[in-house]
Image 1 (cartoon, rainbow, N blue to C red):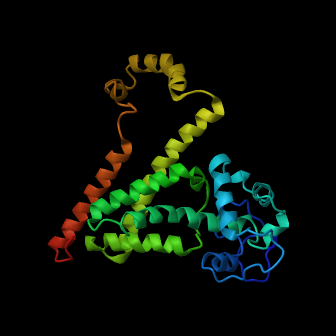
Image 2: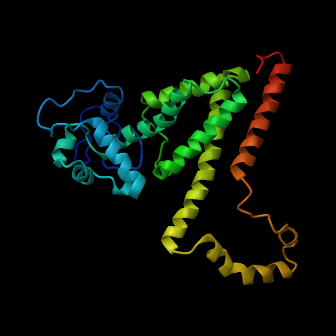
Image 3: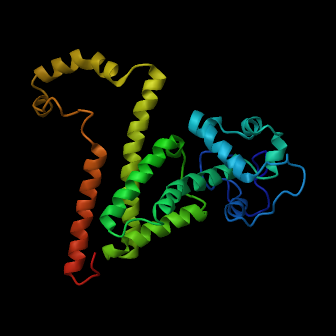
Length: 276
């Protein structure tokens, strides 16, 4: 894709324009070259010390602080103290930059794993817990991840390494390959759903200036009358701690998922499958 958003002659299937929130929407061939280190490096022109790594790092920092909409080539040139055109010598535009940003942040938990011993735990139950916990932490550090469309992720080394580690840790479940992918999708979808709910709540506070407590207190008189009306007997009979913030929905949901997987693994073992 050219800087003006039009598609070039590189075989990219990108649309004519992109809002910069869909992975794989730019020049796919160029993104892959940059991700896997096969692309040509600028030999002249850019400011000394400017590197693709610095550009990606600056883009992630801006997205973390202000959201993905704040990331632009012009903004990054200001952050890095260089001309905008210098950045285009390293990355074609925001769409391709997003591919690089995504692969970088997906690799952060892997760096932590390598520092702690090189991989996920051998016990698949513990591994699922670690996968879910590290992914939730990553989404909290980088809330903009929940704003992007990853339906067509351009797979770089970090993404593939993460999948490799996950599959290796889950292999002892004794499931078929499509089912192992299903386990990963199920766990990730659960984590993303919970993180999105939490993120939306924080965003609502920022946009309205009302805390959660103030928001629900404003509805209390109406809800109390509704409960006394007799029209909602199940709701009226619930305990006072039903919606307590002390209840850990993440732990509860994850434990139920693992328990469900244990039933399936046990069924396969009983039928003569691999031991888990």
